[in-house]
Amino acid sequence: MDRPAIPAPPKDWKPEAKKCNHDFVFLYSDFSREAGTYNDSYEQRDTFFCRYCLEYKTVIARQENSRTRPPWYRG
Ligand SMILES: [Zn+2]
Image (cartoon, rainbow, N blue to C red; front, side, top):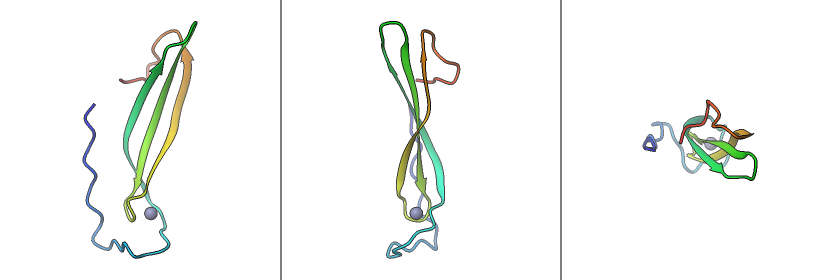
């Protein structure tokens, strides 16, 4: 899967700022599948970045145990 490039920080970006009022912007989703005995485990992890300090965070957006591929699963 192609990942979008990380956008440049805004013009008012201050890297020396100690405190950041994070404003997280969605960047991409990662999908993974783990085979199980009866069900496979499907997972979607979304990655966001803060447009001010460029800090990253990844959260588990969806998780499902299923014998068939869930409709939201891409990968
Ligand atoms: Zn931030």
